[in-house]
Length: 534
Image (cartoon, rainbow, N blue to C red; front, side):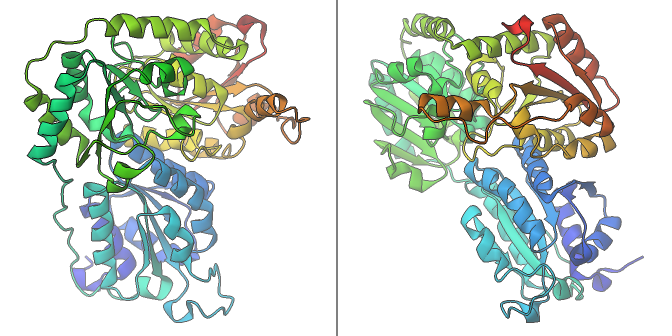
């Protein structure tokens, strides 16, 4: 049996990750990560082999999105890091706790430009803009301190990604002791004075509204009860979808993108904004017109004085803060007309859909009826997903995922693989457009190798249709958005997956039912232009 003193840094790092609760890492081994692999062989941590480091990064992102636990991508220096960096950017935009752990060239060569294998002039400078911090270990003793710092960020701050690089010579050095995980700090709580001021504004409001984002996912119960006490409509960002049940009479789902909802928001005299940036990526409006006083609850103090300055700035945990407001609010008379107004807005949205959105809703309605209520949907960047943000009802948070912030094509499939591995008993599906699917199609092989019962809804509109539509609106002849597609059915089958093309609503219902119990992933191709959707 190997003793603690005999562990090298690579082995000790893996052992330490296990102490912090890591049970899965995603990556592609290389000559610069062999000592990590030695440690994996002596641990209970599962290594999932992606087919591209970008896929590994997205899998770690998806794992973290659905579980709230940090996802870990383990990659080689140089191209491993740069390939994964797109997923890191997505995690940064959406405040996802992702640890990118990499090797680096030997420490005595760093910055000298000798042309070493996988050399980047300064690897952590490359990742710094998209992380809470990035650092290179220069001694074995640096490693446990850096990992403790990373997990402290994840537990107590806005949980953005972290990159830690360990040079290959340091990976092979003796660890020099028995590394232990630290007790992690908690997120800060609100001050009594701030809570009292927030409650005063909410009690006296004539038309309060609540805006929620992904940072509020642990505050779902408290926010729902506050909304009911006040009779306040709840408007979600894409990441805030389901924080109050989409079917609740006060919910406008992730309706920030709709002009009908934006017009309604103007009427609020007090807005409680919880865990949301109120970002233009959710509304496609550079600045929302908010005329009321804003109470902001956020872990990030920089959000208190951005485009939407706070009348009351509460820096702290969304759950702790909203529970404190709920206790302090006392008895109130809920605004009675809100539920009627919300129902009318929902009807107005359905009545003003574009032709494409009507086809989207036909598809989404079939899917909603066929799938369990608690299905986790990992959306890629495609028009069917854009519509689903306000038209596909979910009963609770973290069931609908569409990374609107970074908005990078190709995230859906690998995100879904990570989600399914994080929550193996959950029903997980992914929706991707034909263009975005091709960015990470190779990860079908990973999903097949893992024998995941994963339905992959491929929305085929035969091109990059959103950009086609944008070009047409701007009177630009189509450029680079109409390329040919492969035979998706044959492609999926060659990747060891089931695959079929849908030609009716009943076929889609049946295909979803079969895919949820299959012995491997199932590609379900739906063509937007088929007769049953028109």
